[in-house]
Each structure stands twice: as structure tokens, then as C-alpha cells.
Amino acid sequence: MASSGHLNMRILDTYIAKHILYQTSISVAVLVGLFMFLTFIDQLSDVGTGRYGVLDAIRFVVLSLPRTLYEIFPMSALLGSIMGMSALAVDSELIVIRAAGVSVVRLTVSVLKVGALLALFALILGEFVTPYSETMAQRGRAQALQENINQQSDFGLWMRDNKSYVNVGEVLPDLSLLDVRVFEFDDNGRLRSLVSAENGRYLEEPQRWRLEGIEQTLIDKEKAESKSALAAYWRTDVTQDILSVFLIRSDQLSAWQLFKYIQHLRDNGQETEAYELAFWTKIVTPLATAVMVILAIPFVFRSVRSGGFGRSLFIGIMLGLSFFVLDKGFGLIVQIFDFWPFLGAVLPTLLFASIGAYFITRVQ
Image 1 (cartoon, helix red, strand yellow):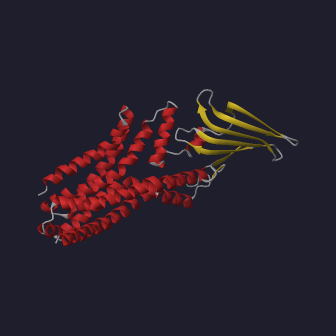
Image 2 (cartoon, one colour; image 1 turned 45 degrees about the horizontal axis):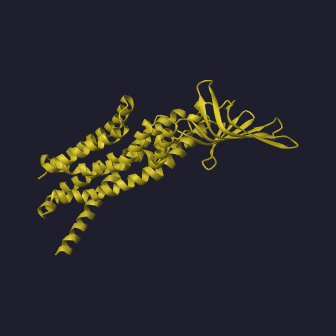
Image 3 (cartoon, helix red, strand yellow; image 1 turned 180 degrees about the horizontal axis):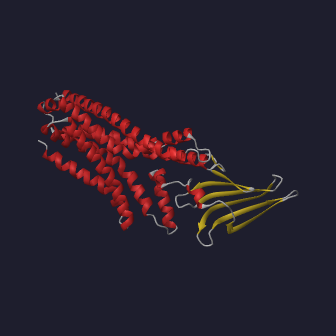
């Protein structure tokens, strides 16, 4: 009997998961399609600048899809869960399940299993897919907008600076540079010197780049001479504005990369609040997805009593939008008033988790 009961619960879990995942996929398709369309409209204003054409705009929109999906995934999970559970309610299947002795707690466990699966998907998306795709999207767009810049992801950022070619290994979020190499040519196209630097930072005074850890090789027809220096100023037409389009933004980094970068900033006595907020948001988003799924249960039951699939869907949309706004709003508040970044990332999720737990206890 116990084995039979266990099998029945597995069937129930699978059946509920099938409905929720199906409806979640529909909500994802609708929301992602809407956001992609808005992004494409926004990109049309840059079409015609440099070599940026309609195909480049489409490429940018497609590569931005994982980031868009990651940002709206908790809302999509909530809508999908509400629609999936409401579909069971409309066909009176929830009533039958309850009449068969399945408690609200056991239903919550079934839904939580789906939430865990969706949370895992969000984790993989945020850690492994979004950082790569968003970097490619931003760099491809910048390459098309800036004709004198060529970005190849495997070989860093390449720029032409008068008679020199500049290679930057990485542009960090604070616009500091790593692994800088400058190849200078003469009027005949022969390599005259090679300068390599470990890192570089733009100084407001005297408004120049300062390179550190420098190795310079001077080349003439007869010999090559090498020398080194701790630091030197770099005379160049390469500005911060040019490099800013290639910087790695906090939302392009994985949680592990953010963690390492925060340590780097702390070691150098720099502010870390914005990156701590991004780090904790990366950690909390998969949990927020699971919370959104659980939140569907009490509101579906309450809507079933008061009548209507439309009511459930309306509640889901309002809750999803509320979470989206609060999630962004708390982040801004934390940065403005210098609160602990962890609070800005976790408070919206805790708030909605508390609301869900409260209403679940009130479901009979």
C-alpha cells in the first residue's frame, strides 16, 4: 500500500509539473516576444550609424534573449504556475485531488518540486548562458557602431589609434584595462615599437591613461632594444567613451566572477556596493523563481472560490509586475541610501515568500 501511495504521489507530481511547465513555456514565449520586440524598436534608432544595420539590430536582440529571459523568469514562473494550477481548478481536478485526501501541504510540495526545477534552470541561465551571450551582444553592437574598432572575443579588443594598433585583453566594469598592448608602426608600415602593460586606469587629472607594469620593445633595422617601467602615461586618442561600450557590466558577470571582482575592488580600496548588489541578485533570483511558483497556490484556491480563471491571471500579472518593480526599486534605494546590498537583493523575495506562506496557512 505504501508503495502504491508513493507511486500515486509520483504520478501527481508529474501531472502537476506537466501543467505548470507547459503554461510557463507559454508565458515565457509571450513575455520574451514582447520584450524582444520593444528592444528591437529601441535599436532601430541606431540603425544607419557606422555599419549598424537591421541585421545587426536583429543579432543584438537575439543575443540579448537569455538576459531578457533571466530578468523576467520569476514573473513567467508565477504566471505559468497560476495558469497551470487554474487549468486544474477550472476542470475541477483540484477538487478531486483534494477529495482524494491530498492536503494543501502535499500540493505545495508537488509545486515546490517544479519550482526547484525552474530555479535550477534560472541558475544555469544566469551563470553560464547570460554572461557569454550578453557580452557578445554588446561587443557585436559596439563593433558595428564604431568602424575603427574590431572586437574578437578570443583575442580581446582591437582598436586603431592613428599609426598604432591597440589590443586590450579586458575592459573591467570601472573602465580599468587589463593586458594592454600597443603596436606602433612607421609611415612605411613597419613595426617600430611594442608596448605591453599589465593594467591601465584613466585619471581625471591630468586626463590621461596611466599604464602600469610596462615592458617596451624598440625595433629598428639593426636591432631590438627592451626596457621596462613601473608606470607611464599613455598618449592616445582612445577615450573612455570609446571603451565604455565594451566594458563588462555587472549583469554580464556570473556570481563567481562578481565575487572575485568584489575581492579585487576591496583589495584596492574601491567601492563595491553596486557589484555586491549584482552578486546577491544573482544568488537570489533562482530562489525568487521558486517563491513565485509557490505563491501561485493560495491565490489559485482563493480565486477558485470567488470564481474565475481571469481573476487568477489578473492577480498573477499584478503580483509579477509588483515583484519586478520592487526588485528593481529596492536595488536603487540601497544604492542611493547606502544600505547593505544584501537587503536590496533579498527583501522583495522575502516579502513575497512571507505573503505566500501566510496565505497558504489560510487555505483550507
